[in-house]
Image 1 (tube, rainbow, N blue to C red):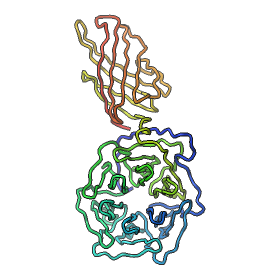
Image 2 (image 1 turned 135 degrees about the horizontal axis):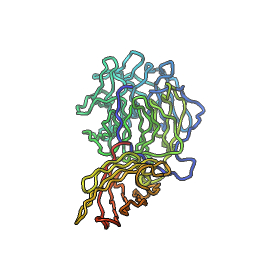
Image 3 (image 1 turned 30 degrees about the vertical axis):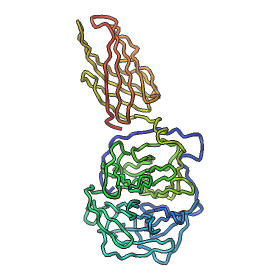
Image 4 (image 1 turned 45 degrees about the horizontal axis):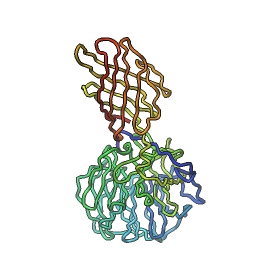
Length: 449
């Protein structure tokens, strides 16, 4: 693991697919496949409608194999010239020049800073005037605006140094671009032609960034939980970016996310590849699907499987309406007293809140607590009605357990965004000096997944 990652909030969205077997993740069985391996690199070539995969590492050897994906299977080819074996390299298709550019990587204790190009038939070693420092674990993407290939970040295991430099390749030479970006490795970058940008999904809590051809801009909002070696691909059928897998500390991921230039949406899919990192991911326009191959799983397993993801023909907005707000929330009532609640399995599972009721001949502090199981059963004070699922992003909870002064309440709320909620508490007292009905506003923010 190259860098210790911190977990931030996870927004879990539910995607209810139509009952069609062609949508969601499906494992496919190509006639031929590369050996079970990980940490190679892949890119799709528009002119030949194929993907090219190079390098990687099996359980016991480094690879210098070149594989082509076309429509439904993998084909190994034997070019005259071949880059040395390596893993943790980066490749990108230079659309303007119709060439694949390969840079860097590592093999055992060797760290590379060589540049190779693939012309569809053979590899050619390029000898530019300027060469970026040797590295692994970097990322590359095509800059639509400037029609060149961008490389950013990486790691030098020899000196144990994380890198923050950025370079562009114009087909003849590398030129450094000076930016203020953080040191980064194990991240993923992808060209986003829908708005002429490059999107970088950063590790170590740095979020999502967009390159517009001149400068980087951080995209505010929720992000997928941070991890290293998750992979992205651009789905041109939907104009979305798809993000899958990765590893945080020792926990591997198999979550699937999509990005529409403004926000991330996690998809809840019936099936999916086992959790992994170091896989390759690309979009096949012929099949109109995302393809995954290989990766590293639990117990250092090397995968040799190929999976396909077909997304439904739905709008981003329609998919996001089924969102779930699982996590812990914290806020205050309008009187400044604390409110906390937990959402799990699309139920309110625990709640604690307080409010102050003051008036003529009345001074009352209201405090209530609730804990429940998946089929809500009161385990603390209060008898909360079952509220699953949360419908239309709103919920109502009623206390049906009368106290000695005849107190009942209704707790109502609505999620106005994936991280913000607000509502009212209506309190009714039928006995004593505080008889009457009062309402208190409340608001809360999601604080953890």
